[in-house]
Amino acid sequence: MKARNPTSNWIWRKHVTRMKLRQHLLSSDHFKNFHKEHDEVIELCKTITFQSDSPEQEASLRARHLQRLALHRILACYTEGWEIVTLIPLLEDLIDKYEIRQATLEKYEDYPDITPLIIDDWLYQYEECVQVIGFCVLLHRTDLLERFVKLIDRAGYARCDTLYEDLLTKLLPDRHDIDQWLHDVYSPLVQSIYADSKEKASDFLSMYCNQWYSEFEQAPWHDSHLQGENGNYVGYWAIEAGAIAYLYGIDDSKIDDRVYPKDLVAYARSQAPTP
Image (cartoon, rainbow, N blue to C red; front, side, top):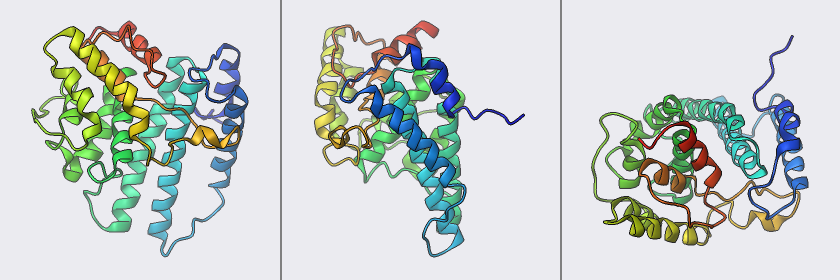
């Protein structure tokens, strides 16, 4: 018997009757279209060759495409309303895909410490990085967190950014205390960690969520919901904000911004106390 793929349609069919959209920018029909097209692309990638100048470049392009699909899948499934535990195998698959991306990129560029995400130059890639870290934190997968962070650290990004380090320091050993960060948009989130009162911490967290979407106007995914039911929208989520609230015990009870992942934070808190 052929083994079931954790990202295949059987999970979608199993949980479809229990799902309630966590964002309502598009209908459930959009996500049905997304899952159908996702599976079709996965099958297509088994037979097509990406246009490239070498086998090494082709492997790198293929790996990046599959990694993006895996990221979009976990975001879409959370937005669609999947039960939190069903996201765990999707996260496992996503980390696998980042490792494959790094390995193929290393071979193509002939550079062993190359990173799959350029987090200092590209704001949307930094956001992708802290989103993935946030998923690892909130789903209590420190093992996956270690694997993902290794890919970023080896490119020299350790000791470069306060938020990056503060997302890791409670869960991973030998992290760094540093008072600088790469992108100004994250200032309120950093300030929520170091606020001198619980009220100020909550206010900074709320401020961060309120301005989050508008700050990513140049991101490839911005305004994707305007493309309609057959577009590329998978949800807009400040997963890293939820991870900070969980890790540092910040009161998020008054945050009602649609980008804040309350269900993920509630799950994290239900599984283990604040580190």
